[in-house]
Length: 101
Image (cartoon, rainbow, N blue to C red; front, side):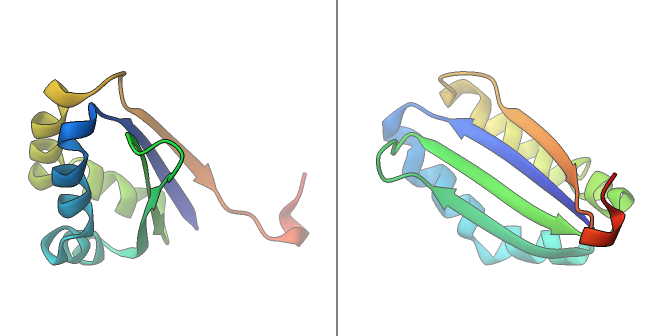
């Protein structure tokens, strides 16, 4: 299993629009259509300009297909002018206890 974590720092007036997009049925359906198992928007009450978007995937290939989709690219393009700092995107492979190195 794979997790993909995107950290987004925005100018405050734009935070509601981004939150609405990440919570939208259209965006969630897109994740599911690309094989996503779950998606979560982590909002920090102490830092209202910070969002973490966490998605879970069975395979790295499924995650790559979503993050290369036109809708995700459009989302990034729309968000770009409102960022305080560049997006931070990280991938994590989830390993069970027996798989530890």
